[in-house]
Structure formats: structure tokens, C-alpha cells
Amino acid sequence: ALLGGGAVLALSALTGATTALVWDRAREAALPVSVGLFVLKIAVFAVLLGVLPRPGWVRADAAAIAALVTILVWQAAEVLVFARTRRGIYAD
Image (cartoon, rainbow, N blue to C red; front, side, top):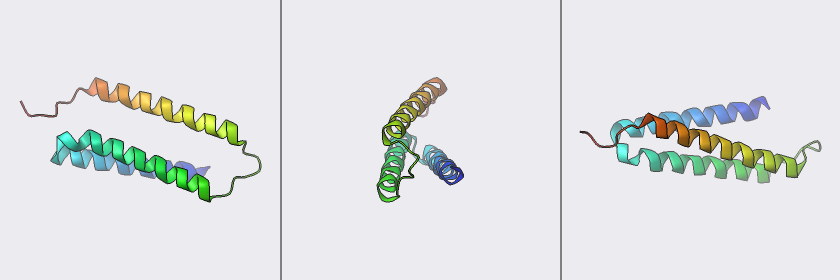
């Protein structure tokens, strides 16, 4: 669990740093880069789930439902946060 949590934390930090860097250099690309990195993370995790063996105590249906709910809640929270920041893309 610690390894998985550490991987999520590291990848989230990398996404945040990359998004901040893009925000400073090309604001109009910040959202597409953020979405692209999110899709890339999901793809990497999907590959890992397919490659690594499943422990006997994990129920596949419960794990899939929990993962889906977690992703949906996380994305809803990110949309709300981004909507409230209201940062302008173009200089006034």
C-alpha cells in the first residue's frame, strides 16, 4: 500500500510541477497538458494492473468499483477547484 501511495504521490507531484511550468510558459496549453498527463497516468496504472499479479485477498469487482468511484470523485474535485480559481489565460 505504501508503494502504491508513494507512486500516486510522486506522479501527482510531477503532474503539478509540469502544469505549473506550462502555466508560466504557455498558459493556453496548461489544461490540455494537465488532461494529457492525467490520461497518461491512468494508462500507466492500467498497464501495471494488467502486468502485476493480483493478490488472493483482492476482489476484482470491488477493486474496480472503488477505483472508478475514486477517479470520478477526484476529477469532480479538480473541476471544482479549477472553476473556483478563475485564472485568466490571456493577459489583460
